[in-house]
Length: 154
Image 1 (tube, rainbow, N blue to C red):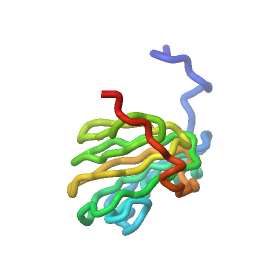
Image 2 (cartoon, rainbow, N blue to C red):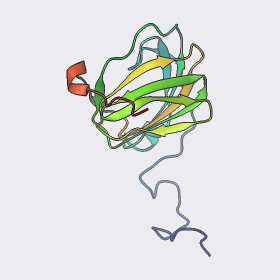
Image 3 (cartoon, helix red, strand yellow):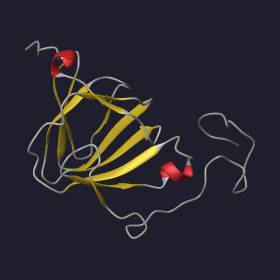
């Protein structure tokens, strides 16, 4: 008897009968890499990308240096973008959305696909998990005039 939603395929399945694989990442198997989209950070590309043939990306990111500049306005060519903060905080601004959006430890934000945004602050102890669909995606920088943000209505 199934609980919750109806099953989408007959099961249970054997390993290899689905289009995902069993994989475990450890700190030793996925070392920290410098760089990424946010300056002053290191990241680990986690197993989800390899396990799903790139359909889903999951990254573990942490701050490695003080935050000294905004990322600048940009957008990502992706279908889903979610950020879960483990420690610290990160602050976003979004085109046509009033105000700043601070995401703190234990909180998650989903960013609308393709919407221009700017990371305007982050804590020195930031650590987060980022989920993307797909794993690899293009990022396009845009000028500030193209990303005019609505003012707060306070």
